Amino acid sequence: MSTNTTCPTRVYSSGMWGGHVCGLTAKHEHEGVMYCKRHHPPTYKAKRQAQSDKWAEQTRREVEAGKQAAAKAAEQKRRAECFPDLLEALQLILPMAKGYAHQHNVGSNQAYCDQAESVIAKATQ
Image (cartoon, rainbow, N blue to C red; front, side, top):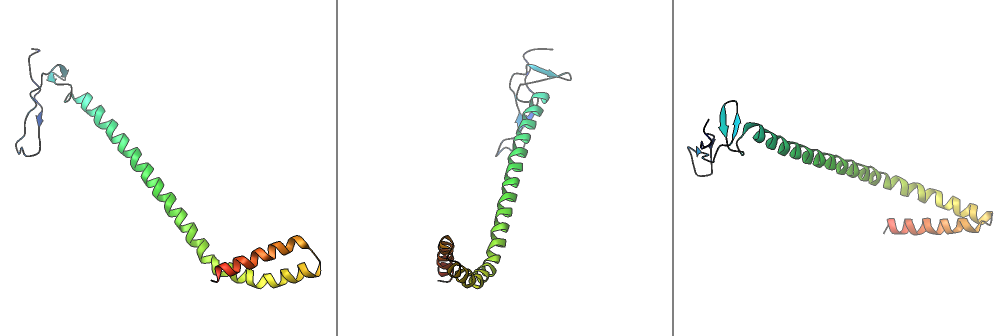
């Protein structure tokens, strides 16, 4: 085989309907045909596989991030749906807690009652 052969691979560029022969110097043999390094089938296949693997990993990461964001949004929605019930429960329990703290002279519980009152006031504004 002559070392002065050119790559026979047909390449297509934008604006060229019929394409053209690569024409680069062919130095790599594959199954009896000489190719340039760019179009040498094993090299070309390995490069495309590496690119495909990179895209697959990127897609996997994006899908995983989307799932995590959806799960976070669902959890936030679930908690938001509980808010009215939690507020109502706190409003029902607070008078009992204040009465208990007053009757038993438990000073540290008064701070919790004050905090609960401020939370109720903030939530009902």
